Length: 553
Image 1 (spheres, rainbow, N blue to C red):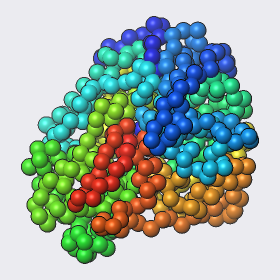
Image 2 (cartoon, rainbow, N blue to C red; image 1 turned 60 degrees about the vertical axis):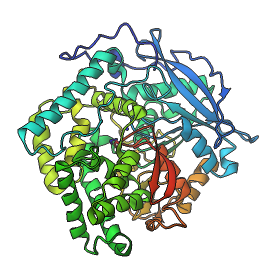
Image 3 (spheres, rainbow, N blue to C red; image 1 turned 90 degrees about the vertical axis):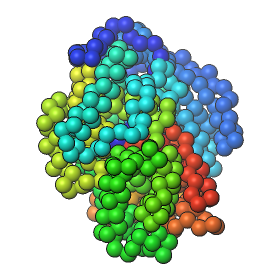
Image 4 (cartoon, rainbow, N blue to C red; image 1 turned 120 degrees about the vertical axis):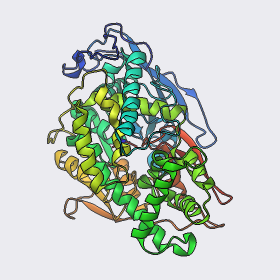
């Protein structure tokens, strides 16, 4: 959600920048399970210091699942093997995106679950088609996010045209480079890939644990293959009824509210940041900083668009707030743009892996569902949204704008109907999550009739299990151990957990947030720089995390 393969099929039509390919047969054709026979993965050691038992392999899948005898692409896999006598099968994990790499997530999940529970599963990560170590890996337009970009708010026809030209050129570049792959970049195709992975692993059924967009991928898999699902965990749940144009609009108000929560937090810590105790005035100072950067980008790198990119991750994870507040305070109080540039490089800048993540993000979201092709519709909707939610609205619009020019026809998203066929699933959702707003979890909970919903009350982070909240993690461990689900009556929820407290300002003795929370939020496939390793440095105190920054959803 900001919402996040190898040889190409010769039967697919090559896309030219000005044309559209026809919808491939796989978009609506019935699928014969196991028509494609995948070879068992040849696992090899690929240990890291953190995950010494990690193994890696690959699996071939059809480029076009409607043509299982045609050309294939390659998906990269990782796993932490089970060690207990009791074996509950593979647990496939996905960090979201679309465009997030799941290879390291396997190690993290296995290490973060209770040892007894993790020992009973093969925890399997994977890079979806087009992502990371899978082949081919997409990179439509290297350097697309290089600084300094045009102001995201199109206050003049010239600024709007500059942003439109960027979006159009990105879409055209994707068509030129990957015309034979783009028709097959859909969530449905990725879900069918999961079933090939299941078959290759020799499993009758899979267990699945997805964050963010990974919840949508898991929901689509469960819709297509309900008989192949054993256990299903969805954390920070995508609303399947808004895929994807409406979901991105809905995010804007939620991120605006989360940005204001950050301002409230800064106001509470005036003794540290010296920005005042009035959150509205502090917010005005942030927008004044934005206006000043339009005239004079900090370090020649941080203009208004880059500033939004830098502060967006704070909407995903409050553990970043102390670092972002220090950079904000240094600029306002000391006229020092250095910490702001450093924050941008740590949280907002995009590297090669981020270019790959964004390319897959657009390829999936633009193909998955219908987007307006008339820019007048985008202009109207986003100006209306900007009046209510100025923080992210136009930045988010340009992030998704290539879909207005996408060189492949849009497919229709899978309809997620109410069903009792899917085994009992476990859903987790924070009430104030910005990337996947709360109502999406309620919608999926109602449509998966036997599911249970665990709510983190007052929580605003995106991705909440295995992030330091013991109450949430107890429900997760119980479900994975023996299928136990909470069955309570708390409105829409079956169980409610209190959110963790917000972080404290940086001190010489402590870094913000929890260690596990920082690592997890570095692995989630959320915008902006999916796959980017960052080192956050503040006032001489270093906090290291991998940061794969949303979509959206």
